[in-house]
Image 1 (cartoon, rainbow, N blue to C red):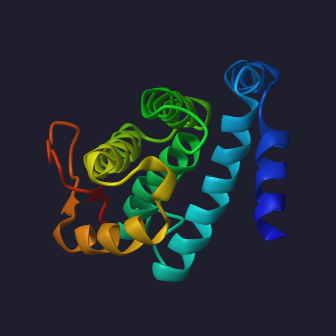
Image 2 (image 1 turned 60 degrees about the vertical axis):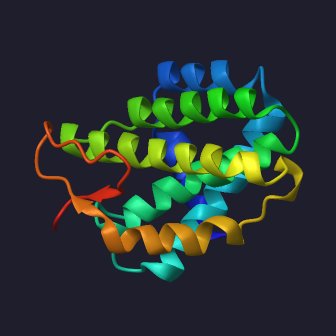
Length: 169
């Protein structure tokens, strides 16, 4: 119930222009929209359990949450469509999230970077597993292990290709 309250309050706080922009992406893809919402709720809940102190801020839990979010969006959307369409939608919806709810430039770089890590990780696993057989557990443990090598993002010029990144508190 708390999660729905957060989403409802978020939508209520958006301007009409932002709501229209969001609807322009979601209405042509209603099934993807529902699946993405489900992925968002699940990724948030799992990140809160694994990283209760940092899942909602810019810490290591946030890096995990963004990568997991993208893996889940990809997983669910691939079950009803092609990986290419799922990847395109995932990129568009996660990029739009950063545009609609702007952060400081370093925070935005971190989020977009970790989103890409999640999408890339899913696509890396795709050739070895039929897309209908993906499960959440495939990503949770692997991404948690990637947290051991996560890097601290300190400025906009940092490039940590292939590593999850987070901001020091």
